[in-house]
Amino acid sequence: MTGADTSWGIIGIGQLGASLVEGLYQSETPFSICLSPRGESQVRTLAARFPIVVATDNQSVVDSVDHVILAVRPDQVADVANALKFRSGQVIVSVAAGVKHTSLQTVVEPAIAVRAMPVLSAAIADSPTTVYPANAAAVGLFEHLGPVHAFDDEDAFSAAVVAATYYVWVYALMDTCAGWLENNGVATETSRSLIAQMTRAACNQSLDSGFDMGAMAEAIARPGTFTGIGLDLLRERGALQAWSDACQGVLGACRKRER
Image (tube, rainbow, N blue to C red; front, side, top):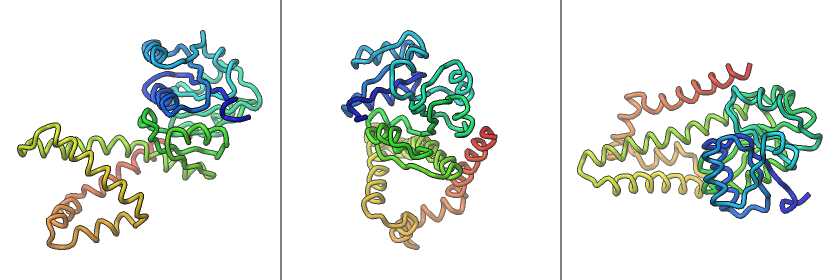
C-alpha cells in the first residue's frame, strides 16, 4: 500500500491533533485525512482551511480509514478505544504519554498498537517524533512532520518522551532571557527575535557539527570570558542541574502512570 493509497483518521482534535492536521496538509502529504467530530471548534476551523473529511462519530472514522491516531488525553485512551471496533491490519497510534504499549494493545485488538510523541511544531512540519515500536506506517506518517526516532525498547522510549516536555520548557527559558533584554532597554520585538534566533543558531550548529554539546560549551565559555562568567554562575546556582531534575521528575510521573 503506497502513501497515496493510505488514509489516516484522527480522533481527538485538540491542540496536538490540530497541529498534526495542519502539518500534514501544509507539507502536502499523500495521505487522505478523516477527523472525528470531537473538538468542534477546532474541526470547523480546520475544515474551512483544508479538504478534510469529518466523520459523524468516532466509529465512522475507524471504519473509513486504514490507520488511526488517537490524540486524546492519557486518562481518556482506554475509554475511547474500548468503545470502538478496530480491524486487523489497522495501525492505531496513541500520542498520549504514560500509556504502556501492552495496555494500548489490549484496547485496540485486533489492530496493531503504536506509541508516538510528536510536538506542536508538527504544524510547521518540524516536529521531532519518537515512535515505539518501529512501525513502517507510523514512521512513514511522522516523517512528513519532521525527523523520526524509532525505538525498540519501551523504557528508552519513555525516557525520550521527556524531550517533548523539554521542547516546551525552552519557550519559558527564551521568555526569561527576552524579558531580561526588555528590562535592560531592548525593544520587545528585537528581544524576542534575538533570543529565538540565538536559540536556533545554537541548535543548527549542534546538529550540523555533530560535536558533543558539553564540549562546545566548554570550548566557548573559557575561564575568565564573559560567557564563562555567566555559565559558572548558572552552575553555582544549580540552574543546569535543575533541568536534569525536571527531566527526572517528568519521567517518574510518566512511569507512575504506566504502572
